[in-house]
Image (cartoon, rainbow, N blue to C red; front, side):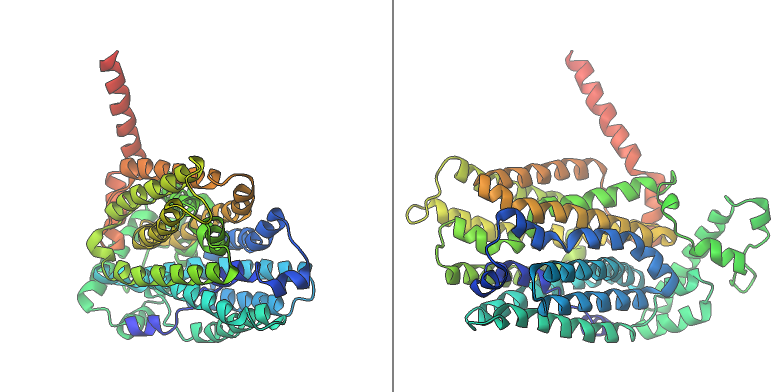
Length: 492
């Protein structure tokens, strides 16, 4: 099962391509000099469309199935990359990025949902982390493709990376159609025989499969008790298959359901964590790595390109142990301790710049900044890059998992847009403002997660849902607030 998943995972090269491309001399001679605001707009123009399309990705996947939803999104992404490769002016290039974003928003969230649904609890952490490994691999490949083409001396120096990206995306779009359908999705639509065959193909043991099916059946009956008396006549038959009305009800995952009393705490927590994952500044580092290294004192463009490639190697390397040990570390510990680490590093870099300790040619300050950027990328990749995306998907109930995960990814894309747009502007106006902003956001995230994030490691998706019902996030927050108020009362 793991080999089948790994062989069909699309490398997300765009992040590794767009930063180096937009500082290439051939790109600038083609489209003219660009200001820091326009630079940020070009890079981030992929993100708002991704946020918009991700809000509908869950509905698309619920209707078509996970593999078809993934395939459609990757195909649209490939069309966007092809438009960028053939752009004759800046407007066409930005349109290509917008189309890319629409496709990426459709497929990326559903990819995590799909793997989460087909994985047994004992392997869910590592398997759901596989896309992150290939994202970092795509980042690595993108950087070094650009490093290799930057000296071509023609527009092919920046067109060729997008041509390669479009070709890979088209290939994956076709391959995604051969993925095994999600057994949970099939069961939700009353196709139990096909679900059983899918479990066999995926190699999930009968014991784990029966545990999942029994828990899902009990939960569906509980959900039915909330329906009207007219709908109660459509309860499951003895063979486990529901009527058409039941199937429509159980397959329906509207945004209204995401904010029902029993689900909304998880919806808000997932959206918050996914947004703050980006507000840590990771994509500010990945998109603008050449710019950051130039600011730290690596004056030549070749040196900054090479430093960016080395950072991609570091990120890819540490993602491998993060994937292997995803379940051993646990979601809660990796999120809190990783958040503390990236907060310290961001404040350290910002403090060095604010104290005027970073000089372009001499002094230890610039090397501390460069090493801290590497350490930040490593710490993030070991913790937040893996744990938060898995957590956002696995805490959702089956009936709203696709929609809730899509909403969480929408908040991720929206926050990413802010980071991508404002990072070059902040760097142009102040050398330290961006680092203090990202460090502050990371510190807030650590505080919220410490109060409201229950551990999910090793639990089945159904056990996670029961844990949230017994002890909701809102109850945890209320208890924390009561304790804080109690302490203040005693002090006064």
